Length: 160
Ligand SMILES: [Zn+2]
Image 1 (tube, rainbow, N blue to C red):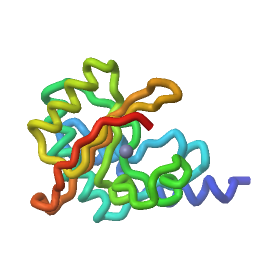
Image 2: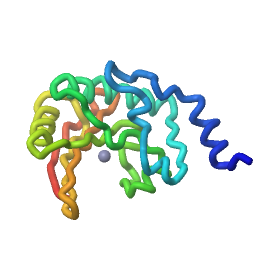
Image 3: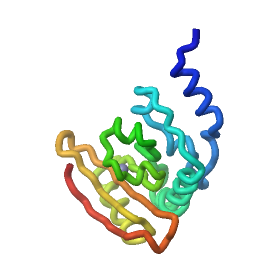
Image 4: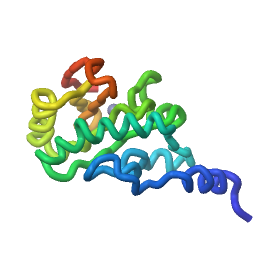
């Protein structure tokens, strides 16, 4: 017998084409993928509007960043409210709207270069270079809003 949770997940995820390209090198699947969602059985399904927000982020920020630095790994893209709670995200997190992504930082040197490149060359709303005190792990959070002139260009680097 099929478990109910699994059946629901299939139904919702079936309508989504995870291979849908959002930009030349970024697919919808990359922005939805989440180990935490898999672990808790959370359907991380976006609305059309949230997909449009992700597309803008990919085209305006992530794709130009990839062009400069090569392959980029998104550690967290879109999060629906349940997933955002599960990962301990802020209630107003732009991840919930599909406007933000966390980028894996392969080394401190590369992280510094990527942070400065985005800050000085690309359009963005918020850019955070976050370092976790507990384990020294770092990532870059970047967001973009579709109404271009509403992007605040706020950048910061800090330890959490
Ligand atoms: Zn983030």
